[in-house]
Length: 329
Image 1 (cartoon, helix red, strand yellow):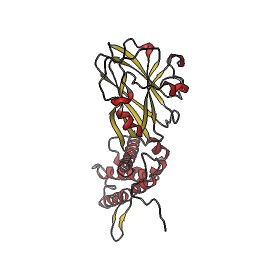
Image 2 (tube, rainbow, N blue to C red):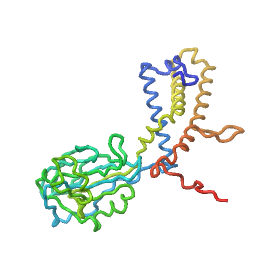
Image 3 (cartoon, rainbow, N blue to C red):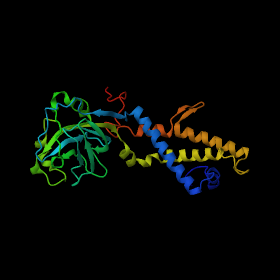
Image 4 (cartoon, one colour):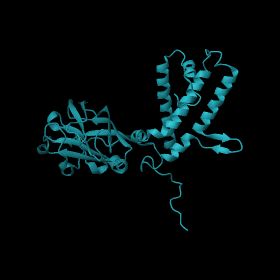
């Protein structure tokens, strides 16, 4: 609090109203920090193309041919998903859709090859009509709690399946969404790891990845979003928000104090209230920018953050299109 100009403990005590001082301070710092970062992110969506790339894409867009079924052979059957080389691209596997010859249940696994056991598992019901089940599983090129550059596997072990599932030819219209659209941000390919490459229900041996790729789908469909998630980049550069957060917190304290009708007579004097209101205007100008008479428009702290944050990621925080790339004489 000593770093906030014009903000005293007495002022904060007047602003807190019915909350305890500690809870009030913690709530103000938390909420104002979130708002500053969110305002910054919103600016990136407009200026630096930090936005959702694909929304709710269904991989297979064709009905099942019931004459085409998968003959079980004790394999791991599923899809290999490779996110594009980017610190900020997040692939969210939203749902799985399965249709079986008969009703059954199946355990679905998500493997990160840097981990011996599955990072996600879920038991999914199978019916004779295609039904969708929510997963909400994330895969990333560079995971903070995993490796970088991994190809993830999502699928099931055939030994745990009683019924039979349907397959489609991967390259004949069935997977055009994944091949023509999603390939810009993530590679998707059906895989079938032979039983001899498996060890229980741990991650399949990735040295057999290429030889396990298949020209038919894996008996289930997926829906996923591909979006820019700059959380890691923000965390790595969190110190740059210090000045903006300080100003936002100070503005909040002053506004809360001005809005508290129970202020003591000294603090609520006309002179002090006028001073507080002027401080709010000054701080908002420093934070958001504004017009200064006889000077013109002055950029704010958040404007400069947007400039400093460009080009940190080639996909999600790329350079603006209208900049000068070369100068020749």
